[in-house]
Amino acid sequence: MLIEFFLKLKEYGLPVSIKEFLTLIEALAKHVAYCSIDDFYYLARVTLVKDESNYDKFDRAFGAYFKGIVDLDAVTVVIPEAWLKKLAEKLLTDEEKALIESLGGWDKLMETLKKRLEEQKARHQGGGKWIGTAGTSPFGAYGYNPEGIRIGQHESRNRRAVKVWDQREYRNLDDSVEIGTRNIKVALKRLRKFARDGAPEELDLDDTIRSTARNAGWLDLKLVPERHNAVKVLLFLDVGGSMDDHVKVCEELFSAARAEFKHLEYFYFHNFIYERVWKDNRRRATERIGTWDVMHKYGHDYKLIFVGDATMSPYEIVYPGGSVEHTNPEAGSLWLERMLSVYHHAIWLNPQAEESWDYHQSIEITRRLMGDRMYPLTLAGLDRGMRELSK
Image (cartoon, rainbow, N blue to C red):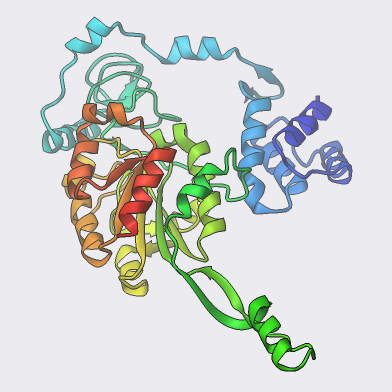
């Protein structure tokens, strides 16, 4: 069994060795982890993964191999995923979903949640009122409501929640991903402003020839600083939620940008820009950076690029407290306007198919705030976006 697990880790690109694998086997033989999938997870990670940048690859390989395995008192069993879905989810027809009505706006939704928390005394499953699972209540998990608050659910299903009351984990984009096509780099090359600075370390062939000729054939080497792209870029990347569908193309863009722009600063956000961003998704709960601090540190000569599908509840953009994850004191739209007042050269790249934009109110709001400078994350869209930033 563990040999297959070892091969699965290799399949996901983890640099694990036989020596590390034998260390894991030895630890298991001494009952360092016993009858607990969680204990085995941490033991396997500490023995097999030597670089925290590989934690995400390990998590994906571990999840793919041990999917469906849960802990019992003294035995580990496999429960078919279909059984869990049948138990946890109530399947509704399109007609049934159409009959479920919203509670009537943001303020009413929050007021009702507070009342439910005060009244409810026990776990609830099914139904349309209490905080529970597999029902049509606006509060809970694994049910359906067109405008609700998700509590205690592993991941999004219908993407209709206006707030999520759980701690969620996102992963950093991999800047070492193999680019599927050179065309992304070619599109980014339109945003160029070459300069030479730093130590002279590159041979200037023309000047060397001229100087050598003037010296009657005695070699006179001439060096100049390396020529590089002097454009400065601030890159803000949306992660988690619906952006999970677009990880591959975003990683390709991220990797190409790291290679193309010497002066590149990047930050992560979720759904919309608010009063704080972060550099590392693993530490986003403890190592946040104030958006004001970003605007004060990086001058107005930076080019600003947002990458996100802008697909969310409109509350998240226009309402204080509307963020799906935290209570933001000021509306996201206000923060975006502040950033655009500092960085006049700015675009929004959207990986969502352009033909679907008109069906999302949040995309329309974001486009309007950006002054219609939203472009699809396609080769043609990148080309148009780089031309806009070059003006």
